[in-house]
Length: 91
Image 1 (tube, rainbow, N blue to C red):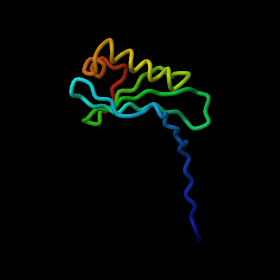
Image 2: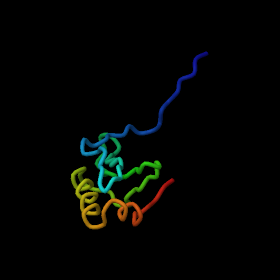
Image 3: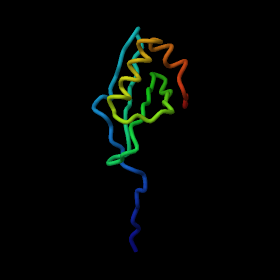
Image 4: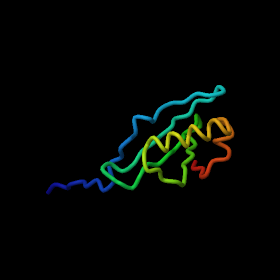
């Protein structure tokens, strides 16, 4: 008898706008992603060196909108402020 393993987890599509960003001596990984072939929009997540994840509650229509929101926060608050004042912190 063989057992099949079914992977019910959706396949994630990562935006090419994702990547490492360094500012003021701090490097974070900017993750912009969605469920592949979905029209539900893009999520924005920033992961710091301690592997603490900051996830925005908002879902963005495009990956570019998500990246622009990250850039807006970066310019307004700087990277330390952006991480401290994050909408949702996950450890």
